[in-house]
Amino acid sequence: MDISNVDSVLNQFSIRNRQSDESENGDDLGRDVFLQLLTTQLQNQNPLEPQENSEFVAQLAQFTQVESLDELSNNFSDFTGSFLSNQALAASSLVGTSVTVPSSSTLLSAGGVVSGRVELPTSSPDVNISIFDDNGSLIDRIPLGEQASGELIFRWDGLFAELNGELLDWQSQNAEIPPGEYEIRVTALIGGESTQLDTGLSANVNSVTVGNNNELTLNLAGIGSFSIDDVIQFNQ
Image (tube, rainbow, N blue to C red; front, side, top):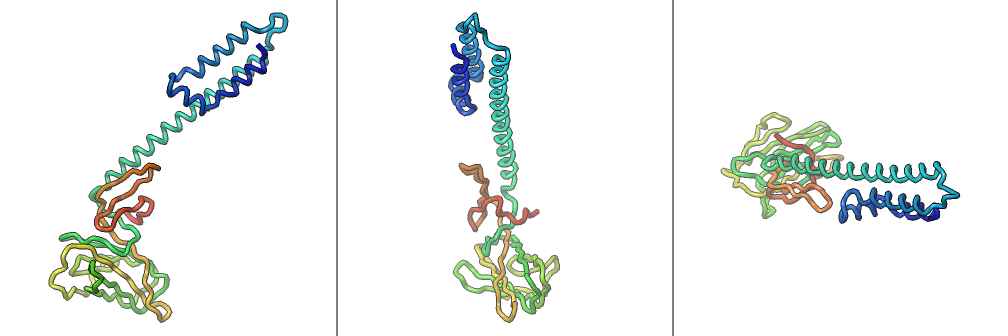
């Protein structure tokens, strides 16, 4: 048997082919085929022109390289699977907790509190939080007055509000705010114009979904599904 023919056969045993064969015939198929080819080569070589040691060593090195790459690929696949499993397990622990995501609406639960945050790009002489019910009707407006540039963090429970950890001198004129979905808009007077700011609002995690592409999706109460990459903050 000509050495080049054996090399041609060996070159066909790529990692992908070996993985497919191994799934059907076991982990040792590649090794068995190599040894069979090597034995056949030694049996059919010309006794007057035996195979050079260097050629024999080269074939062994080629097989060893393929085995090493295959083992590395399998180990990496195991690591990836373990990482995704741990990630899904960690995400499942978020069920029942609160996260902050980019949204202008959220669900106010009975006895609950909605927290939110906006980034004020520049100082403003007049900042307001407007709250609308699920019919689009304005039910409250919380004046924040003049604010410096930077992050504004607010909390609202339907009757009272606080800003950056301090209770505001404000109380809703409504006797009672029922639980439900509400839209919250934060506007600021910037350059003489009223500008609506991008808002991040808190919501409770109802469940976690692992997609076909292993992307983790958080299903949030009242506002739908968000990728875990969209989470701005994990709340206490």
